[in-house]
Length: 187
Image 1 (cartoon, rainbow, N blue to C red):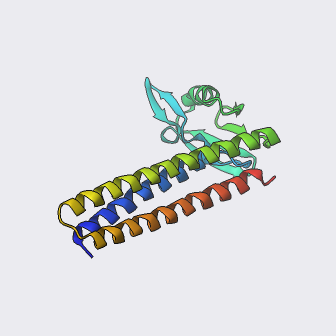
Image 2 (image 1 turned 90 degrees about the vertical axis):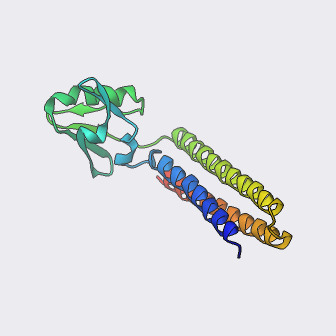
Image 3 (image 1 turned 60 degrees about the horizontal axis):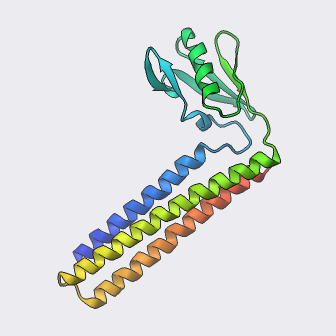
């Protein structure tokens, strides 16, 4: 196999892996009925004038299936942490006992579950768009390589490989969507 083709396929795999990784990261932030510390990953707290990720000012843990506990490293951070959680509009009502902020994760309503499934499907569709975009770029690169002297047979072989990778990664996206959907809909 041609060295240029190998590099092109390797780059394509990397781009598709990035799309899958991004999807997995987005799905971690989508709530699935039980408490999950990753739900709070997007929250930023005002820490002495700078917006800082919650995990850098406190220890976030999940003591049971319905509770998230946030223990700030400085007691003065309890107020800003509560404020940031409320501002994030995740539907949580934080409570504190002077040392720890607790979030009771309410069970999901049927309507909320359907909304979350839509969110998951949308994120999956975005990942598929990324994969198809990577396929298009790879096919364009193959055409350029053929113009630069690559044989037509090798170009066809490359296109087949690109399509196989696209199908493989699209199947991975479908599987991730299906698993997350099952998580969300399981009561």
